[in-house]
Image (tube, rainbow over all chains, first blue to last red):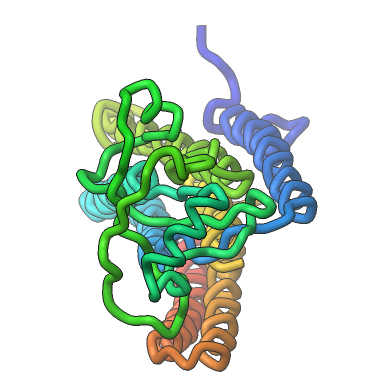
Length: 283
Length: 68
C-alpha cells in the first residue's frame, strides 16, 4: 500500500507528511528547551552567587563558528541537490557531518576538563593556616560565594584524578592532598606553588560537576541535552549520506524532501546553541 | 516556513550574536585592558560583516534557483 502525501503537499495543511511531522516535533522541542531556559532564569535570579569565567571562551567560540559553518554547508548541500548536482551535494553533506563530529569532540574535551577541575571549600582553621603559611594567598584564596562564610580554592589535584569528593578521601583513608591552585587575582602572574591541604581542613570538595552548583547543574543538563540533539542529527545526516543515499536514484523528489527536513532540524539545533553560548560562556 | 527563510533567519541571528559579542568584548577590554578582547571584538565584528554579505549572496542565489 502506498502512503499518500510523501512528496506532494496535503490539500488541508499545504505540507507533505514529513514536514508536518517535523514542525510538530520542533514545537515540542521548543517547549523542552524553553522549560530549561526558564529554569536557568529562575535559578540564576535566586542564586546568592553565580560563577563567571569558569568555561573556556576560546572553545565555546570555536564551537559556535563550527555550528554556524555547518549550517551554511548543510544549506549549500541542499541547494546543490535542488540543482541536481549530486556530487557537490555529497561533498557538502560529508563536510557537515565532519563539523558535527568535531563539535562533539570539542564538547567532550570541555566536559572531561571539568571532571578534573575542583573547588575545595576550607574550614575556618584551614583558611587561617593557609594565610599564615603563604603570603601570596590573596592571589588564589577565593572569597566566600557559593557556600556562605566558606572561602575556597579552585584548581587541579596532583595526578589529575577524575570526579573525586571529600567523602571519597575519608573512605580511602587519605589524610592530605596536593592542589595546584588557580589564580583569581587579576594582577598576579605565573603559577603559584602547589599547596598541601590536610583532609581535616576541607569542608567540602567537588569537581566541576552538577553537584558543584546550580550553574554547573544547568550547564551539564542543557549542553548535554543539546549534544544529544547534535548526536541525533549526526545519525540522521549519516544515514542520509550513507545507506539512505540510494533513494536519490529511485525517488529523487522524496530524497530531496528528506534532506530539506534534515536541514531544518540542523538549523534548530544550531539555533539552540546560539542561545546556550552567551548564557554560559559570556553572561 | 520554506527552508530558505529558516536559513536566512538563522544566519541573521548569528550575525546579531556576532555584533553582540563584539560589543561585549569591547566592554571587557575597557574594563580589564587585556588586548585579547580587542582581537575578539574585531574578529566578531568581521565575522558579522561576512555573514551579512553571505545573507545577501544566499538570497540572490536561492531566488535564481527558484526561478529556474
